[in-house]
Length: 264
Image (cartoon, rainbow, N blue to C red; front, side):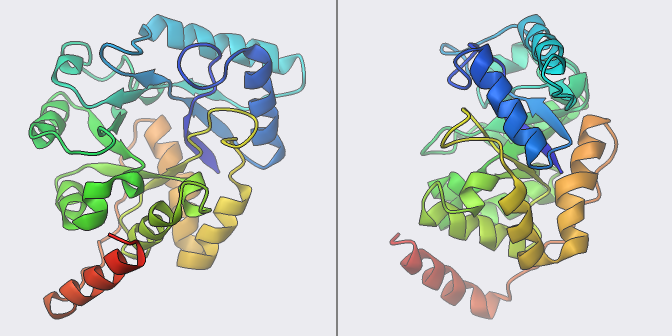
């Protein structure tokens, strides 16, 4: 399995605080079967705005230091880019902040709302040859209330990345139920640990992988955990599952039942 979302570069955002923690995170990932990591520090206008060179240098440092301890997982540069109009002045083409300097970009919505320019933002990226990958949609309250918003984005070419911690219930029941719901409808294209430390939010994806196999079967799990992430890292096309639609006659009842379970 490959981890497409990890805050493992030391002292660059709210992830690993220092190199020692970064190396512990790397050790946990390697021990539990992760074959590659994409380092995705936050890129948030006005808060965290590391340069692309800083991210590349951070990956290089971590790889070099890791080798001293037998930690040989490939680490690729990327970023978790907050959706903001001004970011489009920085991300003008495939390359900076994109996964492995390629044509896929991990993007993040604000915590509680969806900006009115979000679809315009996605289209602007796509017009520049960049495919947006939406980070942890299962955590977003608006998408929980109206999953059809995400269905429409996927139909327009947006990919999704679900957090392992959400699937395992560590981010609350709502996030877990929504992650399971999106998986069941074939709306998930890759997984990330979204690890920030070597403790509570660590990069162990082994139990997540087991749960995914149990939920959707080995073939689809392999697609999400290995094949799609490798294609993303290599800037190759990703085969997207056909979304399982809910019949209109059942839709309101299913959503109502789901929202009731989530206390919404």
